[in-house]
Image (cartoon, rainbow, N blue to C red; front, side, top):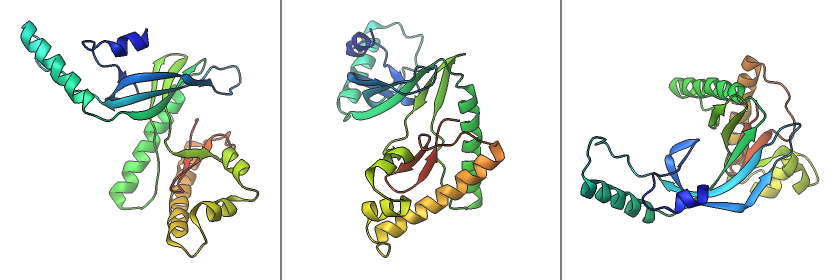
Length: 217
């Protein structure tokens, strides 16, 4: 049903729940996987999206020609945009409101750091609760879990950084180390103030630039 909706040129854009400025152009069902979770059912879905066309502000305009022109402009804008591959997790059997609240507070911390000029890093990804026991979760792009990192190299995080960014005296290594320190400091403050527990190698991520990111609150 979703693929039929996406394929209809005159249909309203199917926006990404965690990014309302993006419209889904295609689903990639063959890549969908069920993630490991105790007594829950999180499904990772891949899709392609483009910038969503602007809405029609004239809701009272019943002129068919104007409506068709608007749809045509929307289709042209979508067609001229290069699709981006994205992911989202659809979760059932879990109350996502706690994650949503925690991330709203973390977003407030981020704004405070920026306002005070403190060079710390937080990534408050988006979570949308759609019912009491289900929601949609944005995937943090370009990341590996600490568990995945441990399987890539025989050693500790220092060995992984050397293997990924080069020797310690090089600029890429120093940049990644600086990013790691700034994000570690920010998430240490956030985790302490929010009393975040249940941290393990599956819900601590590393970005391609060396930032630390916590998920699943």
